[in-house]
Length: 390
Image 1 (tube, rainbow, N blue to C red):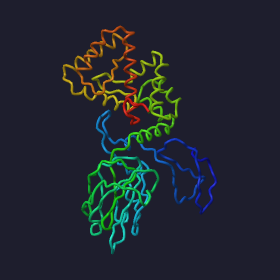
Image 2: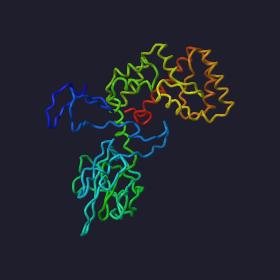
Image 3: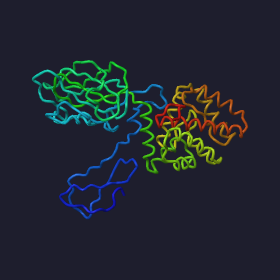
């Protein structure tokens, strides 16, 4: 249990510490024997999933989309504001849709010069690409213009003389709507300051950009190290279907660097028996054939790796199917090749060439291909630069 059975004091704020180090998505509060509880709050640090730090990018795609680097899931926070007369500026970062003016941020009306602003610490250092300034529900009281500045440095709140750089110049925004505005400067920052002119109310503010790769990889490594046994086992089985290999990787947790994960992966292969290799090979669907990954994530990986095969002509697919059967009859295991980025004709040529190998040479080649596939998958899963280690 996170907290063992403990005595509560009535009409009181009861606080309990836990030594848990695993990522959790649900908790269950059990009360003995019955009674009433006013509030349950669980305080901790967010450990985001891959989609939060890398978006819905296709597996192994070269282009990276921007992600919401101001998301609360990344531990972003409003750290300073000029005014919070009507409502809390922290509402701006909520992941839900605003339900009314009370659910946004609104400042008092100004009678003199100047403007209002709010400062956000991004969850990851990032290069902003565009901003969403949501003024829904604010009709006569939305600001007329906004601008965005950025700053990069350590700490929650920049000093008063911090050098801010303009990310987007003063731009008109429409009331009661979602305004999508492009950044005008390419600059990696840790904080952004949204300036509103002269005052008014906003429902939400979101920053989309490219996270710093090292910071993103560190978050993914923290994710791996925070997984409980079943989730960690599934993570490694997505990279390689051999249970023996997966158990060796589990024994190495926690890992300090991505390079340590990749080195451990390579070392774990060195201890596999032939039966373990057969299990790893069997976890892959046939090249050009239907899916069949051992986990949903592994099946998605295989589909992405073979995406270019789907466009091959019927003749190529028919020869590939026949070649797969001949290969398995000849060698006793599935044709394994690092298929990502390779089209059907190329993979067919490789298959036909390898049919000329003897079993010993072909088993060694298949093992080498499995190592390549596993490394690429781990790099993708950890958002690591391919071939960089680290």
